[in-house]
Amino acid sequence: MASCPYSFLPSDTDTVIIGNGPSALILSYILHGHLPYYDLDNPHPDPILHAKLKNSSNLLRADLYYLTEHFSSSSLYSDQAMPMNTLLDTLLRPNADTTGDIRSRLRWVYQPHKAIPHLVLGNANRPGGQWVDPPGAAGCNIGALSYAEMLSLPGYTYADHYRHITGEQLADFTRPTRTQVAGYFASYPEAVGIRDSIHVSIHVKGISRSSNGFKISSPSLACKYLVLASGIFSDYVPPPALLRPITCLQSMDITDPLPILVIGSGFSAADVILSTSPYQKVVHLFRWPPDNRPSPLRACHPSAYPEYAGMYRRMKLAALQSGINGVPSPVVTRESNAFDNDRGREMLYEGFSNAEIIDVRSEPNDGKHVSVTIRLADRTIIRRSITHLAYMTGRQGSLNFLAGDLLKEVMGVAGTAHKAISTDKSSISAKTMRSKAENSLEVAPDVFIIGSLTGDSLVRFAYGGCVFAASKILRDAQGNKVPSEPMGVSL
Image 1 (cartoon, rainbow, N blue to C red):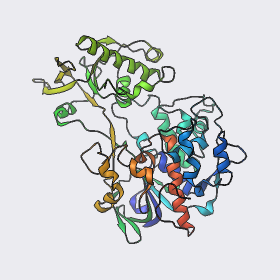
Image 2 (cartoon, rainbow, N blue to C red):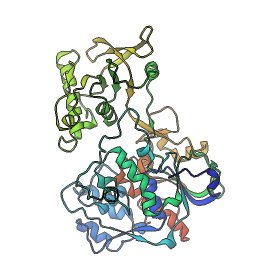
Image 3 (spheres, one colour):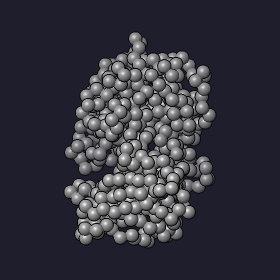
Image 4 (cartoon, rainbow, N blue to C red):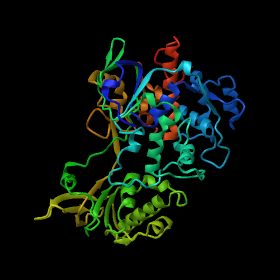
């Protein structure tokens, strides 16, 4: 999809959505007139929920609090996401985390006369947001954490896309690669007929409140409603000043016998290690809190996520050896598992838990390597020459496109209650907006947050916020505007 020049954009519209990732695409689908209804002829397996929905089949007018008030006392529902996101997830995919019936209990009814004029403005060069951005040091062919069904958007699922591209049926429990998911999201607007509203490679700046809505300085545009779907994954957390000399080194060179340095204990760090050449040596520094969950990789079952389970075992071995012997873990050859065998790897890995870099020096007469001094958990000092740094301790988003007064409105109490990853007040983490989101996704009058800004980062949990925002916008279009209220009100 080609970029839309700013001069081709209208001067005003009803709603502007900032970001062009999955949540923005879902909301655009709804605002084009595809409205979600509970399928009364296909009852949900939860009899309590079914009884409640019998008289509230229009999800855009449902009382979300009433529908979800029993979730906390039921073993059927996850407590990892906000109730409204869990509600839409269970209606789309009942029993998705078990082997039960996963037929959707939602019907998408096309009512074009209820469509709302809107624009989706994203800085990614294709629809898909962060999914279509270059992955950096991580490879594009690592399988997604979610199964294909959990990444599917309404009206054109990943299975539909796979069948369209390959002519074959998608196998159950498929984990598509990042490249495949990016291709799916990029194709989605054309497939469901929402391309007219999706605009890419647009860097929005200077959004402020006006007398009748909002004014955007670049591109010059006015709107009544503002939906923030820019996410919390746009930037990697930058390394501290001590490590900056390493960032000036060249990219990884498979002919260089010296190791790369990877810092981080989560999926991003694992992706980098798993994506390197079979001949690349790796020095890996990671946190391993003895009394807390040491790494999110721990939850990865070996049969479903063999590569991450293998990475976790390797980190655990390094941590145990360091703690038992008081010495750094030995250099170990990567353990054999199905994933490794498929790729024919013989990579060398050296892991150090709870270690600290205390000095970084450039190698004399050499601009390709840096000497790093590392203090281990037992206070032992070691040195390593490294050729590249992958600092993978987290990601953050930014609301720097909001003008100062509007930024303060949006951040509100939540902006001070949680410390963002960055010292930049416009930078945000998963926790930054969570407390406001739990009260209402309308975080300021006529300003909504959806997607990972709510703290629920999985695509499967994006639907609830989109339904909430759409319900308020559509009510106003029908002349039934209601004030900003907590989640418990009838929509």
